[in-house]
Image (cartoon, rainbow, N blue to C red; front, side):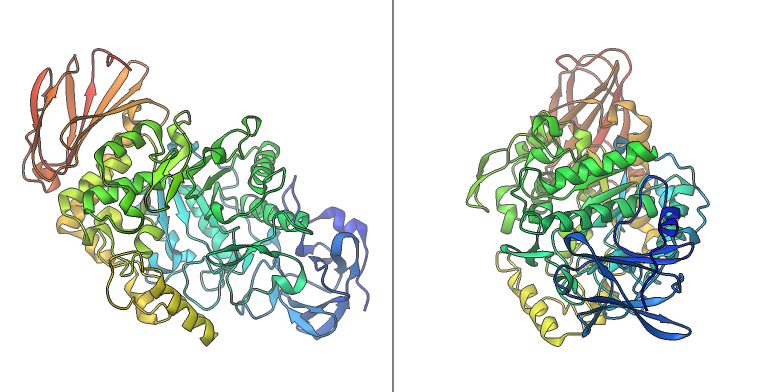
Length: 629
């Protein structure tokens, strides 16, 4: 049976004004349109599965390897596969839903089928983001989008303003970090599928929370990765730690780039995501004249201008390359922000004493001052871990272009035993760490559970069906820790117990030091929101004022604040030289915060003062500017 070519049906379209999905199975008022890029195929047919049985519909071959057609009989909810050259049945590379997993058929989804309860939403500016990163599968006992909705009141009580979801696209099995996803357009069936994700975003918006979705454009997972059967999505010119690189600059790359740019627009438009976190962009290899990231940023910004909904792009990168966040007219890619690993490494190595692996490049207090002042620590200096010079200068970039954290899925989960900081450092150090992140001039990110000192680890887990692949994952996990001082066998990523051990234990939050730590996080977040100089746009100046004592000075107009951090384990005495009267807003060593007792005075003036070991304090000036700022 030949598909229809009803142009009126196409014109009526299914999706939001100003943008239309270029590929996939798209439900129309008069059936469904199918469009797939398959330059490797000589013939392509839709195998449509419905209540009346299974039927074949051939698609027409067009330009640049696209096959298209409209099937009037198709309706939302029908399942389908593409038959390649009469022999190979494969799911849709742009499937919106995989109800039977990565190897099963795709399902047609009508975007008009969900009625948004909060259609008018004004997201906070990026500088107002206080991010809470979570993994849907381990954040709650149920491990679903719906269960996350039930925790929204908790997140509001904590004070965060944005929820960052680790990758939620279809991966093999029922447990995975999400970075083994193989259907970039399909929210995972076990989490609740596309409708479940829309309900979560809608509920977050209704509560005033922005939503960030973590997307992976540097690789696809190994199991269920059928894209290479259709087209030239991958290249053997480059290799990533996860396998073949995606083809962003070789022959046929125009359509590959369009596939991933459309994917970004899909999350922003159809799911109303407020920002995308771009995983490991150092694994995106593009040596063309117009870098993929630059084109992506341009497309996202253009969509924002058209729709009136600004969305942000936040990159993860280990390159310390300021081009990521530099405007295109100055030779950059124009992304909005990037994760600042340097800051994490400095804080972690100082407070834990760890010096193996990449931590060998850190551990010096003046590095923390450099990061507070100039963003990157490594801006061209020689790195012992890398055996070469590393980075360039980001000193001219605003602090609101950087996201900082003391824990995240990588820095916890990529430890062999997945230990959180609560298992590595003292309670006083945990409070100090919280202060270093939330009071910093950057955008803070919290990793689920850190706010109450969760003790359960966050381990690496998978659920593959291919036993050879399982064996390879286990071997690779062992090799990963050769540069670190770990002994013994890592927990088995395939074991269900590894996944279960990684779930949050919500009972811990309700009492003792866990509750105290939670309230301390609330207080820090409250200060960040209410004290104007503590915002990212404010002026900043950092210095060492004693052995282990870091002074961070902030100013907004004539309002000023001071943050003091004692990184040493012992009490420290120093000279206070700033003029004026300074009123104390917080002392982490206070008994109300489970500390040993305050020694910082309620008001600071010229003279000497004492500060408890591993503590932080906040003061606000009420009468005169800080000289030199």
